[in-house]
Image 1 (tube, rainbow, N blue to C red):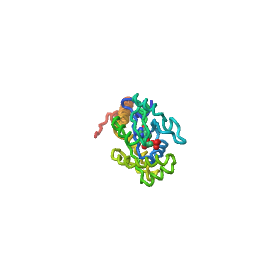
Image 2 (image 1 turned 45 degrees about the vertical axis):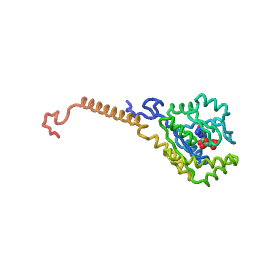
Image 3 (image 1 turned 60 degrees about the vertical axis):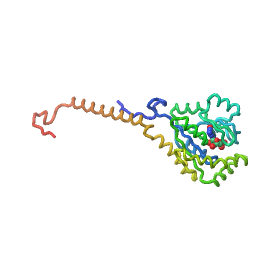
Image 4 (image 1 turned 90 degrees about the vertical axis):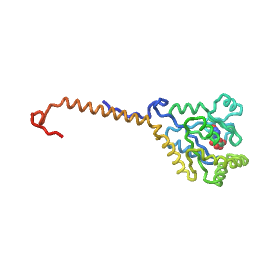
Length: 252
Ligand code: 5GP
């Protein structure tokens, strides 16, 4: 007979005492490098889903509809908003952006952690709407580097780039409402810190209690079967030694 095993995370998601997905919100000013850090995170940490946002801004070269964003017309966006299809939505740098409610619900019901890469307004709205949110703010090291990064990626027209830089200060001022701050001055370290946040949040006692209960149940079961096996062996054994020979025994 095989040994009783501790319950593991293979339990079907959504069960009362199973692992529930964590909702991570990650924000930074445009050019703060959160895209790169999130990509690294998803390459190195298993089980992290990503919510593809809706937006009315035009696709940049290389962006794929349904992968980078769900690119929508203002009418489509408005229709979805009216139908209560967004967990949150906001006007960011002059365009509409929104998180599809159904996608988040679906991932979390499957027991997967999910990342929302959204702006500070969206982060505030999600914190209000959801019971449990882990929020991370990625700090750019300096204004100079922010400008350098935004200029180097050549994805915005000059006036759009200036708007994003102008908005950066107000966004960084919101850092105080986030659970974690990661300075993105060195990508390797910043990526490792983000991964560490995810691992640490997963290990929180309240998220692992059902695992501990499984281990305890397994220990109790193991001890019971060991005691039973020991008792059976003792009953089967032929009496030998001083007792069998009727000699006086010393006891402890
Ligand atoms: P970008 O146009 O550079 O892709 O994104 C501009 C800003 O919009 C970024 O700060 C990004 O995080 C934010 N953003 C992307 N998707 C969403 C969303 O669904 N909701 C909100 N509130 N912001 C978003």
